[in-house]
Image (cartoon, rainbow, N blue to C red; front, side, top):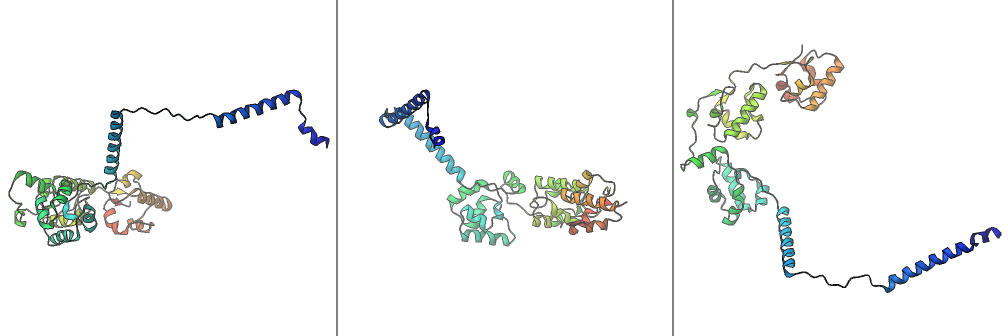
Length: 290
């Protein structure tokens, strides 16, 4: 019992401290209920300030609305599909007219022709036509002449080796402009020359039907002399530089080489897990096992 009472025994100094603490708590609690801390002083805004604030608010709202709208990037209207057409605001009939026109093998080469074929409204045409991007040969032809484009006949183009054609030769093909011709020549350089005519289909952003047309006039007549790399002594960087080999495949090749010490035949590459068998003939154009 004496132990219990000892917790509640205070000397005079301690009792004074407790008294003042309780007094401070009572004063703060009383002040909280009796004193009004809110400010009733009205904020004085001039009419000009209110107008400026509203103008800025409207501006921010408009920006938010514009940013929320789907963004449209330049595109070739010849390749509008159902989904793209719906996004642009075209109805089913307008999209069907365009698709039927394209299936006939024809191309739309102007905004006016797009209007005639699809029969879209003027309001929709004015909205989407600024984003139309026609091939270079169409743009150049429209800028230099009012005469409609005349197709180049096969007899007008000299059949050449695909490895010897120049940019001026390539742009004779309908659908190939200067930029596309540059991409073809650049890819040819990376390959050290085309070995197979169908390697033309591997050029970025070259549509198949345009490549088909080009191959009617230009084919691989003389295969290039490709500088081969010894797979057993080549560096990682040298193997990775081959067009048809990516980083992951290069690692797998080097891991396999480390396991077997020496690759006796390139056919061994087919044993590597994940090796692209369909690219074997192209990859081995650049390799030799010695």
